[in-house]
Length: 77
Image 1 (cartoon, rainbow, N blue to C red):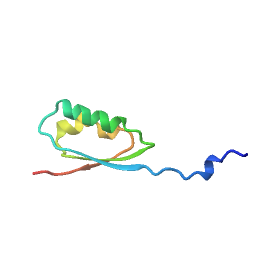
Image 2 (cartoon, helix red, strand yellow):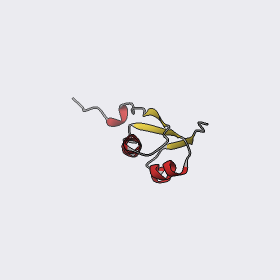
Image 3 (cartoon, one colour):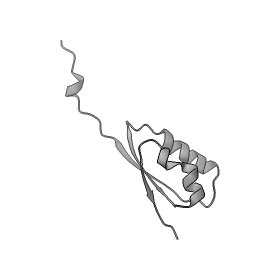
Image 4 (cartoon, rainbow, N blue to C red):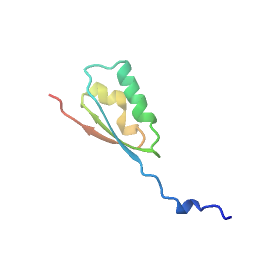
């Protein structure tokens, strides 16, 4: 019996994941958020990050150097 060809299997779609964080300061939750957006498997997830664009937080997340993601600043105030 021939083994099924990998090319005949449908390729799984990536899960679209939108993540948002609003924060007045950087602490443990923000570190967890950064670890999450940096370490999600991009073969499984299409990541979009929504964030408040305040300088210290943007610099902390280092989104310009993060693995493939879409970053969208959101004005809260």
